Length: 356
Image (cartoon, rainbow, N blue to C red; front, top):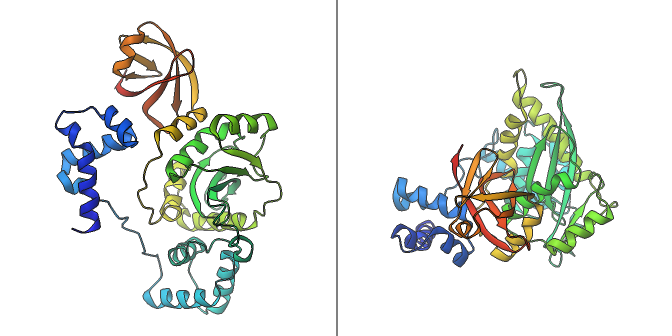
């Protein structure tokens, strides 16, 4: 049995009690620490395609690089082996200067080198000495993207990255600059996506309105050390963003009605290239991250809670009929809400059941 088959069988074993109607997904979620949304996706995939639906999918673009043939790939690999001490932007400039016919974009080059060595996006002399003991240190960087060739609008890209390798693990694109508190949903989504609960998160000098009070509050509530780092060298990240602007200009030149969504989907192609499915965070850590969710009070009616145009249900809510409970919800996922009682104790994760 190969790894893919083994991975599929493992998923099936986890959801089998639900398929046999022996357990509810909520019970399996608590036992396995796998999110309800993931379990629901596995069940849907299994019902539609059987065990094949649970097979770990590889991206069609993984290890494929636009406008790069085998000869180019071998040449880049050889060049990199001789220049491992260089940062990614310096490596790119030196390589482009050494090749007569050069038409490889920076993000494509970035992807090729990243496939060779996960430590490439760094100044190695500075970071390699500390990367092991700081492997759970992350940073947040925000930068304006202005692409006048295709659209007369400034978008702000926010990057969540490993502090000492500069590996980008998540990003978001907005039409306005976000203050620290406005980035709370993004911070939560980034930690969940990366599936590593950080020891510390550094805010570069591009993040606004991060007061000492808000930093202390985040650190206290989440057990993550949130600090500002005014001295962090953001030049590598800025250069990456400049090349993003160029690539967007080339990709969308002449296209009308360009939206942030179009750019977001385009950027996902190389920022998340070859990304592997990761194990979910444990239940304890997920509850710590509830701090970043939007909070509001809602009344329980007929065992359910209404939020905007949706109804959310969990059996435990039947015990709190007509009570006012605190709910926490995410702008990134409308499939669930997290419910707390009046004492701020966790009650349940209620599932979306209807659009009203």
